[in-house]
Amino acid sequence: MVQKLTRRQFNTALAASAALASLGLPRAHAASGPVIVGTWGGDYQNLLQKYIAEPLLAPKGVEVVYDTANDTVRKTKLMAEKRLPRGSMDIVALTASGAYEMWKNGTLEEIDDGKIPNIKYVLPKLKTKYSVPHIYTGRVILYNPAKIKTKPTSYADLWNPELAAAGRIGVIDIQYQTTIESAAMINGGSLNNYEPGKAKLLELKKMGVKIYPTNEAMAQALKTEECWMCIMWKARGVMWQNAGIPVEIANPKEGIVLYVSELAIPKNAKNKDAAYAYLNAMLEPQPQQEFAKNMGYNPTASNSGLPADMAARIGFDKAIEERFMVQDQEYLAQNDPQLQEWWNKVFKA
Image (tube, rainbow, N blue to C red):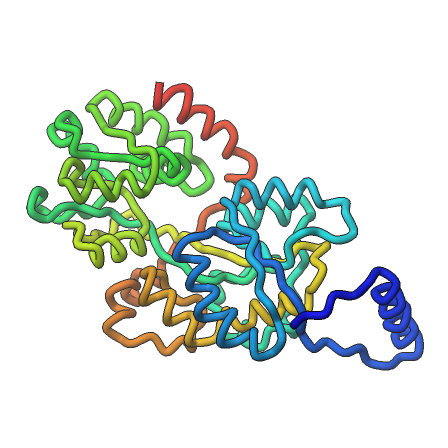
C-alpha cells in the first residue's frame, strides 16, 4: 500500500532534503510511490500494464496509474498546467512531432541519461534530448495482392486513374499530415517542403480517391476488399495481416519515413524518480519484445533480443535502415496548422 503524505509531512521532508543538500550529503533517489502515465488506451495501455508495470515496477513499490486520452488532450493538459508547480502527469506519451512541439513550448524536462541505464541501447537516430523513444515503425504501402498483381514500388502507384475512379484507392483523414508528405515526395517536395504534395493530391481527388475517417475504417475497407491500396504504417499492416485482412506490404522507393512513439517527463512532474525508473523499465528486452509480438512495432533498444524471423517480418533490411528518414519536426511545428486547414477546406471540400 502506498502511504500518502500530508502537506505538513511533505514540507518537512522537502526541508530536510534541502538541509542535506546544503551539507553536501547525497540525496536518495530510490523510485517508489505512484507514477502517473498519460497515454493512449486500448491494447497499448494493456501492454504497458502487463509487461512494464506489473513485472518490473510493482516489485519496486512503484504503482502505475494511467491517465488515458489521445495525444491532443495530453498536449492541451501540458500547456494548461505549465505554470503550476506540480502537474497531473509524471510520464507523457506522444508522437515524435507532439513531443517536439511540447519541448518547444517548454513543458518537457531535458532527459538525464545518467538516470536511465538502458538508454545506451537506444538507436542513435531515434534519440532526442527531451524524450525516450519507445517503439517505431515505417511508412509503407499496403495492397491487396489478389486484386493488384504487380507489387507497388512507389507512392506514385496510388495515382492509378482506373483504380481511383473505381474507389479502390484510399487515404485516411487523420493521417492528413503524412499523406501530404508522401505526395510531396513524388512531386518534387521534401521532408521540409510539403507544398508540392497539395497539387499532387488534388490530382488524386479528381481521379476519385476515397477518404476514410480513421485507421480502423481503413482496416474494414481492406477487409471487405472495398479498398485495394493505401499508405499506412508497417506495424498496422502486420497487425492487420495477423487479423486475416488480405494485405501485403511494399516499401516505397522514395524511402521509409519513421513513426516513433515517445515518452517524456513534464518539467513539473510530481515523481520524477519513478518516471525515470519507468523509462528505464520500458527499454528492458522483455517489454520491447512483447510490443513487437503484439503490435508489430520495432524495438528502439538494440539489445531487445527479438527473434530473427520476427525482426525480418516487422522490420526492414539493413540497406533500408541506413536510409531511414525522420520527419522535420521544426517544419511541422511551423506548418501543421496550415496543412490541416488546406486538407479540410480544399482537399476534402
